[in-house]
Length: 347
Image (cartoon, rainbow, N blue to C red; front, top):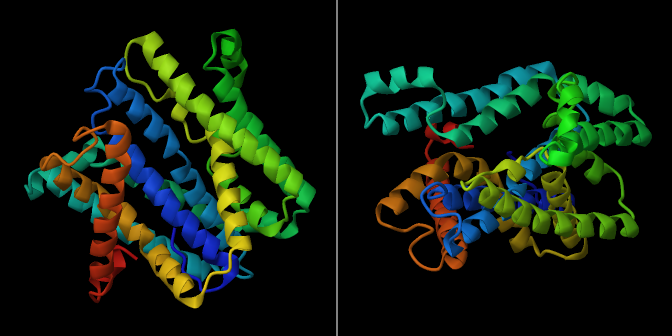
């Protein structure tokens, strides 16, 4: 998740990370009253809309990591196990304890006991997932180093079919029979989030033709519209809130995320950023990891003052509150980053 660069080639990665964290905040703000607002109301429709819009966040975060780590010429086991993985472990342990302490009303004994029940806040799962990818990173790099373009395309084809399309189709009654066979494949062993990791590298390393860019963007646009409508329809059929079509690994979210990644990359390839803009984007990009870790605390504090998705028109309040959370979290992360030793938990 961490990257800072002043060159044009990687400015787009920092910009994507900024968009990704705002997407993640959209999800968490819209989910605050997900199960408390009637699904037939305009408010829930707005929550469903913005939740869907934010769903590209995690996927493009992983794609950015793929760009950074698979494009490196060298990555030693020493760097991996003394620098990258310990950094994530320190952040995970520290913030898991912080959130468990808050959840237990600052009762240290209760906070430790609560850890047996699982993560104190759901967004911390991302760190565990990334650590998992880092553990197999040397193996992935061997594949990437020796793979032809065609080999990577074959892997990505498996990813989108086995991990994305088949599970997605199972959500429809006419394709329900697929479950009888799909359950024996164990798709996570084949692809999982590693698919997005490799996809990020592929889109960065190989030029996408203008024709394919148009196709991907069109498919992405269709996918996000379909996601909003399918999930809304499913909720009304079930008569209860659902996120069944918001699965990050489903083909609809995968196509949407790929389109967002390509649009930002294309934008950065065509726009000439001045040095000041590069410096600002790069600096903000370097703080995004901390924003991810701290933003839930900011969200909860604002919510306690009724600054949330319900404070006025939900279509407007969700992006407004999300931007406020982003700005405050960014400011707090910047301040923490200036404190020696403590900065290690956010950078």
